[in-house]
Length: 229
Image (cartoon, rainbow, N blue to C red):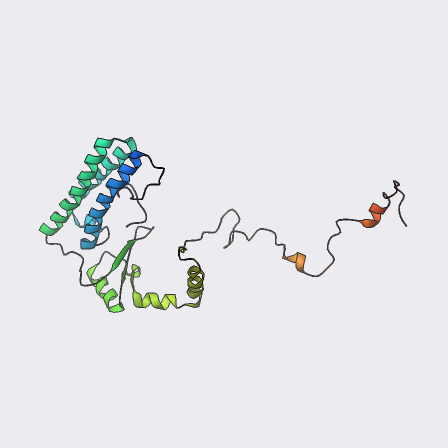
């Protein structure tokens, strides 16, 4: 499933919370059916590849139908939502039939693969061996070669000492996941905290600043303000 959606992609499927209203539950339940239709298309033709293979007229109709689905969701129109979603499911079948009639070759099933649409909208493909990666480069000309990886290559990356440290940290919590960390530009620096004053000098040598003057306080002990010599 793609991790990033835009106006040309159908709405994202996600499990509703226990507090969700009836409309949200209905929408997410129906979107599962649309996601299943897309998954079948992606397995046969490649992740989001089929829409790029058809002619511009059919592509335009597909996006218009998808727009109707978005509009029905925003309007919370039950009837139009059900109708437009059914139309989107049929649309995947229309795209598939057009590509088949044109003799376009589906993505090869002879190369086991995982396809993932990244947040930059590029498709990453992971295969088993370097030889399969080379074959995938020949077969899928629309893919960027730097986004085709083999498990052989990933094993080398995972064995890097820095990555091994991340793996060890992740092992402490089975539910943990690696996320992208972005520095806070307000503070600057790689960590986002570089311009904050360091307190490490408090542990270094030297006379600390005096906060309480016992001699000065002594003169008030007996109600006098005479200086103590």
